Structure formats: structure tokens, C-alpha cells
Length: 289
Ligand code: DHB
Ligand code: FE
Image 1: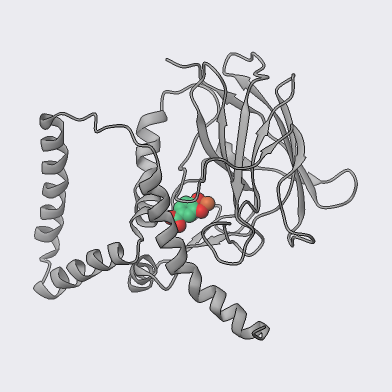
Image 2: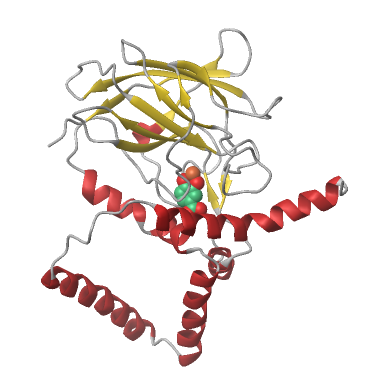
């Protein structure tokens, strides 16, 4: 047994490298649709991205030292496995915006790099898998899944994943049980669910990798507000990928991933049994097009 201090610093060090590598592996294993873009669209998108880069270089008269620093940094992002983190923090929110702006029902937001399919199946009234004495304020999260027109959806699945009270995600940080704070909840015949969990902590982008290096070099902060991740699906409906935040929580108003929307901020109340908080949030899915 190592002493606790050594174990702790070890854990923090392992997190950036391990989470980058795991996020890259996870993304590579994910089923992706074949590129749906023809030559013309690829050419347009690539030309316009390059033109935007050229424009920045001209406007700011970028030096050779800066060009080399950029090259070295881009190479290192790949070596660190941090492309999923980089893209999901600084790019995904706009992709989500343009794809879902006209969709009826609950607001979506970014998925981020830490979803893992196949979480333990749970009944409509269940506790997420957690360690004995899992730290964090207890939270009961309940609600109802409906179609955007109000129809109840008893066949819905609510996939939920979150960080623990240290801001760490199972399977991307060391020393956590495989499915800690991850579950796939089948709602009941009224479309309702009642999930017992603990409140997550704000999440810090790993500071010792390339993304952390950019954040430090630019003088930004590295934080996302505490959040619950959800993927809600039901037959005949579009899957809703979203996140829920906690009103008044740190970084709700300055999320580094720009993923907070006013509709996604929860107002938890003291739990009826005096133990932690409870909150009700309904989820509405858009019919398939
Ligand atoms: C990242 C992490 C998250 O938990 C999230 O929700 C979004 C992005 C990231 O590190 O890229
Ligand atoms: Fe997250």
C-alpha cells in the first residue's frame, strides 16, 4: 500500500493522460455514419476553414516563431490524445446549435467526450451505481419523458452519466469502479423516472496536457460547471443529448465549453427527507422526421 499523499498525486497526474487516451479510444470505437459530404461540399468547407486561418494570419501578422509554436502544439494535441477534448470543448457547441436549432422539445447541448454506451440497466426508480459512502450531496433527480406534443413515452430510456464529487468520470480517470455514476434507466408506464445520485463537482479540463497548455498560455480558466449528462431515447423519436446544470453553481455563467443554455439550469430544492436535494425536470423528445 502506498501512502495516501503519493496515491493522490499519482491519481491527479494519471488523469490528463489517461482521460485523453481513453477519450480517443472511445471515439475511435464509436459507430460513425459514412461521410455524407460530396466533393463540392468538402471543397467548400475546407477552403473556407483555410481562408479563415489565412485571414487571422494576415490581420495579426503571425510570426514564424508563432507558426512553429502552433505546429508543435497541434502535433502534441494528437500525441496527448486530446483531439476529442479540444473539439468537444471549443467546437461541438456550434455543431449542436446549427443541427438542433429548429427541433421541438427539450433543448440539447454538447455530448462531450465521456459517454460510454452499455451502462447498467436500471428500473425507473433506482440509484445510480456508486461506491459505498460515495461522497457528494445526495440528489434525487426525477421527471417525465414525453413527446414534444405532450404524449407520454413509456418506452423511453434515460441514459445518464456524470462526474463524481471530485469532478472525475468513471472509465476516464483511474481508480473508479467501471460504471460509477453511469446508468441506463427505463422509465415506467407513465414515462416517469426517479434517479438517486450525488451532485457532481465542476469539471476541470486536464491542466497537464496540450489543452491545459493552451488555456494557461492564453490566461483562460479551465472549468465547466457541474453537470449531469443525459441521452434520452424513445421509439419514433429523435434522441436528445443534453446536460443539466445547477443554478448558482460555479462557472454556470462562464463555461469553457459554452454549453450552458438557460433552459438547462436546474433549481434543486431541499429533499423532503432532509437528506440533500431533489429536483424535477421533464424531458420532451422531437418526433422522428
Ligand atoms: C469535456 C468534458 C466534459 O465533461 C464535457 O461535458 C464536455 C467536454 C472535455 O474535457 O472536452
Ligand atoms: Fe461532462
